[in-house]
Structure formats: C-alpha cells, structure tokens
Length: 230
Length: 113
Image (cartoon, rainbow over all chains, first blue to last red):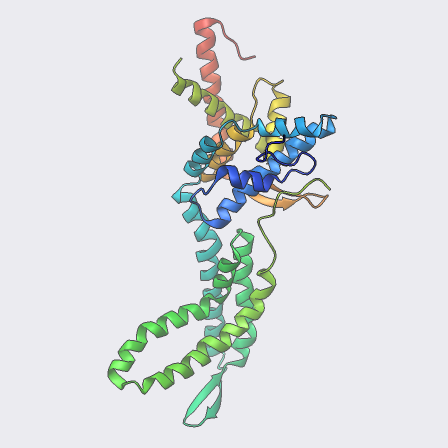
C-alpha cells in the first residue's frame, strides 16, 4: 500500500511536501514562502535529473527525498540563518526605503511646484473650499509607482508594495490623526468637519492618484512556486 | 577530531567552494550543488540540507545575494551572485585554506595538490 505521506511519483507536489515537513518556521510569510519555493524547486530539479537518467519515478522521488535526512534539523538551521537581522533587512529594503522614496518624491514635487508659483485651484463647497493641486495630482501616480516598484523589486508582499505606494498620504493621515486631538481640544468637536475636508483634500484624492500609479506593480507575484520543467 | 572542529572545516570549505563558483557566474542552488560535486569529483558533496542553511547564512552576512529570475524556458529560479563584500572575502579565505594545507603538509605529509 503506498505511503499516504509520499508524493505522487508521477507528478510530485514538492511545494506541498516541503511546506508540510518544514512546518511553521516562525518567519514572515513572504520569507517563509521564498524558502519553501526554493527548496521545492531544488527537489523538483533533483527528481528531474534522476528521471533524465531513466531512473524510475518511485526511485527518483526516493532520491530527491534523500536530500534531507531530518526536516526538523533543517528547519532549525534555516530559522537560525534567517534571523531577525535578515528579516529587518528585508523589511527595510522592501517596505521602509520604498516608502521613504515615495514620500520624498511627492514632497520634492510639491516643493518644486510651489517654488514655481503653481497655486492650487480652490472649489468652494459651502463655507469651505476643496483645493485641487492639479499638477501635483498628475505627478503623484509616478510617486506611487516608484514606491510600489521599489518594493516589488526587493520582493515585497502586495501589502508592502501598497503601503510603499501610498506612503505619502499615509504619512499625512498619521500626522492629521496626531494633531486632531489638540485641534478638538482647542476648537471643539466642530473641527471634525474641517478634519473631514482635510482628509478628502490631502489623503483621499492624492491617495487615489498614488494608487493609480502603484496598481501595475501590485499584482505580479515575486515569489514563484516550484514549477515542473517546461 | 571533535565534531565541532570537523563541522567548522566542512563549513569553511563549503563557503570557499560556493564563493569560488559564484565568482565565475551567478548560479541557483541546484546548479551550485551539481557543479561542486562534478568539479571536485564527488569529494565535496552538497545536499539540499547542507547547502541552503549555508547559502542563507552567507546571504545574511552580505557575501551573496539571491534573486528570483526566470530562465529562457520561463522557469523561475533563485540565482545567487557574489556581492562586493563576498568578493573581498574570497582572497583571505583562500589564503587561510592554503595556510591550513601547508601546515598539515609539513606535519603529516598531507598535500592538497
């Protein structure tokens, strides 16, 4: 009777096998997936190399499995190798630096426009005005694209790419929430209306522009699954 | 020889082998293991279990850098390339091994050539 835990010799699913045998490594999801897919690809290559030498499918699977004596020991070694330091490095490269680049690009663009004397267009809605900085809004998709692209280049998750792309408005939102309690304390709850306008003006609309630029870089997977030889 | 010393030697030789190979061209894990086995006539052999923890350690130290790339057939592989820091590491590592074999040679007539 075939072993239920052995992969199907005709079409072994190495990704599933590695994931099951390694268990949770306690690493961030993208790093863990990277490891699983890389090890699975190695097993697939070992299997294919054996098959190319006309070794039977069952024996080829056995040969591939002999690459690892003890999966628990391997998991521990990998955990140790992928220590906090690397996780921090990865997070810095795939999230913080791209986010910073996106914020910097949006800020420089705004400064240059102001320096050039470009003024926002005010649209009055009752007692308050919405300000549209059209040239800046037109540049923002590039800033969003820059953040998301840098994050994807360094194998950031979709969430990291999105955060990096939207970082300029997330930063403004953070500052607004930080300042709002003080504004409410000095001006009362009526200030919430201004807060709403501010969020629409400086977060929602620019956020949409940034998102437009970031979208093309959100979908492509950067951590491929092990694939059989084509 | 204690297990610890043996493990250090095997680890050091592994690092040197990997750095030397990657100094020639970027390679992915399976190919690194295959070329080391082939070019040392099977004297040095890497399995998946011995190769990847070492590669990840070297990557953490900044000696090598891994990046997913598709080959011409569209197959994704994680290629490792030597970083400038890894390249700097290679010469002193070679020198250490040369000194190690010379010492063994003078002591016990063991030559690496």
